[in-house]
Image (cartoon, rainbow, N blue to C red; front, side, top):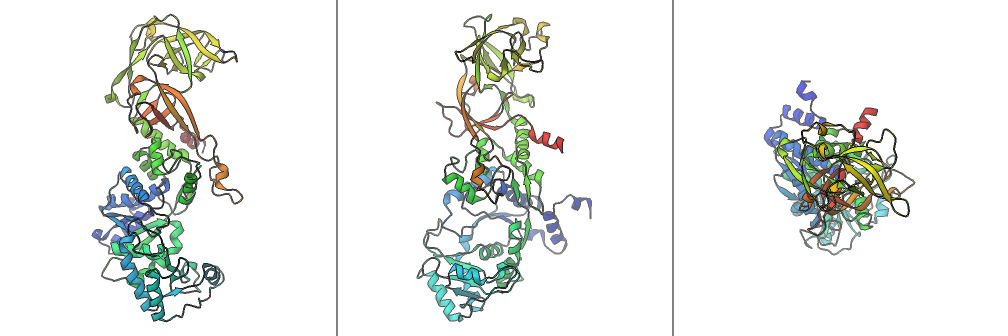
Length: 561
């Protein structure tokens, strides 16, 4: 094996082997086939990056095909959201397709299967059919309708199509092998009746093809060369190929299904059914709630396309399912935001600080760099005055030598400003500290170049001028679940692990330059974490979402392993 092939993942190795064995590079075509019954989540990001990444690697087209075969659960809203997510991640599709584009062709092929004696209409109940299917160790038994004549099946199937039967009364089944060791091959259902309005075909159809019948045939119609899906579909591959056998013309490209492992994320769920439950039962505010693992939720929280693509590249493509610690995702967004965000000052839990020897009514404008990671980011001016806000946790009356923030009799530097010394403090009737009185050293201004300014103190605090600060709603998000695998407990419901403290809303104060910040803009609040402006923010009400803290918990996990 060459050094190049060693660096390929197993999916890429499959493609390379096919190219070596006669596949033409011009025949390569991939697809991303979401079902529009919900918003895409972080698990879909792996599939998106895989398929569109292969398109980029091999300069091959990639279709975006919506598997819209269940009008009971699908909506145009979901179609629009999926398209937005794929584009936001930085990918472009060759053509936009829908399984509903092929309803007539799929129907015509199904009719041909009936004529060939390979499909029949069954009007038993779902319970009766389930019993007849047997078990993995016990063969199934034939449906009493399996021997219906071709003419009767054609008549019944036409009546199904014309809406003469109610939902659940009739299905079309493929006639394969009721004794197969693969339960999926025991006369699977191809069509069911649904009297529902479809978001694209309206009421033109009242029979809808099942996934297994639709998927491979759609790949074939589109001449997709490689159809990649997650491991739960490995058992479906035999059926995928059987259905292809019924329509395949050897003058065309035959799609090849291969499977890769689902990458589950800790402290969350990625089942669309469960995500929908969270939305409908009010545990979150919607599909794009920043606590949700949806791509739109991550975007609203402040994640970037680069960080998600880097995360997907880091976890790679594997053959076994795995639980990925959410800390790795947080590490990737932290790494990216550190490079691209401006540093600003915001105080989340304010404590009033008064500099007693600073002139009353004076405002001084101090220079502050925007980013130590990017010199071209330049600097800005921030106002300094007699009365400031600092974080409550940054002051103690008494503290040991390891406390490098402000304490009575101690000195710290105010970021971009002066060295101050705490002289006294004021408490309310309950003993809570409500104000700290300090003095400042006028000669210690940052960047002044004087000898006094070089005097070192161990602590540096962020702050904002009270007279100039802008009040902001700060939304502090934590993990939505307290358990790393909330949906794997047999004796408990995943909702039992909802974190009651997953959202804390507080009022903080930020420097005045942020007053005009626009939704989606991202910043590092010095010493406090990375924040972005929420979409609900207005000129009257500034709202920030905390994306992630500054603490690199993933690095600590790595160090301990």
